[in-house]
Length: 541
Image (cartoon, rainbow, N blue to C red; front, side, top):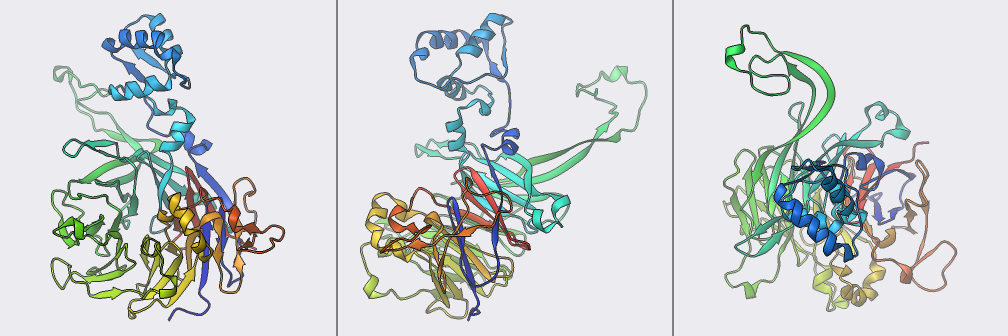
């Protein structure tokens, strides 16, 4: 059984809340986001100058001057405009008349451009964070967004040993992981949004991570370079090749110091293996293989082989009309390379052993809690769907999150969870309105802390029901200053509301956090809402 002193934490958009059961206090540390200076300096997208081919200049100017001036588009400033014509008047006219609509037109035409010229609303829409993940040491924190971009933050080395400043993270690297694609056979647009990021254990000076959108998984190498070669025999310093006839002597190239540069390079691309949208990737403990899961299948990949994968789970029925459930999440056991678990939309967990057969169509264990007949309703199947599953670091327990609760399962007990935490049971009476505004389909994540003594999950406006009392710690950006202790706020489920209490009827369902990560070695948590990344740490006395 889990220890009695098991404590719980929960966080919501604009709010982070920690359940009772200890003396730990949490404080706001910092917020990172696409609208902040530190990320803006790295640009939302890779920077490049606008380059207009000659055949685009005349029709562009004509359309701008005649038609597009009537459109209600936000004007943008062109940082640089390089035309194949030397006419400065053309350059000035293009710079003055270019609008957001024309930027989209130029993207469609394949013209290289600076995406930072897009209006703020467009940048924020593409910069919505869709996944958050610490590496195995916690020194690096990666985020993926709707625009296919990966931003990596690094813990400040000089502040790492200072308790009050140990959660300071700054931008380390930014790169475009995925681009929008189009499946011409199915007439289907493939979003560039990053669904999941998983770090590989570090083996050398470089770092490796896997990132995936709906269809394609990529392996990226993140490396540093602080020296550059100089003194080539066959090349000039600017990279041009020399005439071999002019070479009269040989010299040994040398490495000279340079400003630190972080490079992100794609090493492998794993594609064309999933018919449905990828919802999970998980690296195996053997550090050689990983799994990827979509709605109906789970595939096993080798990190060195991109042209084939092994299908280890397939729940697709012969007749799709007989489909009753889909796969919602999957994860490898942290220590046993042959064991993995996957969850379903029916609220079940299936533990599989790859030693039993090549196709794990028969599970080793089935974890399922019988439904309480008194709570049966039209929405029962929807709210029982598991949105996330995580093994504890020691591999003994599993944590699942459905719409209303968090459950802790012991791998040795299949019939019921050892702990059930009601996250927002008070919303059961509001399921009808939540169904109408689609909030009932929100997929909240959950995570363990480094020693498996705490769990973290989310709700709307940051409400979670504790073991002894209801506690909500408000952590809005407007009301929080660095190192300020988060103040508790109680949620009123009904009756007369007291001062500083939050009424259930006043909950804003647009304020929610779906993605989080907990530092593997320290009490530092990162939570994402829209295109902002909030970082919190425990209060140091």
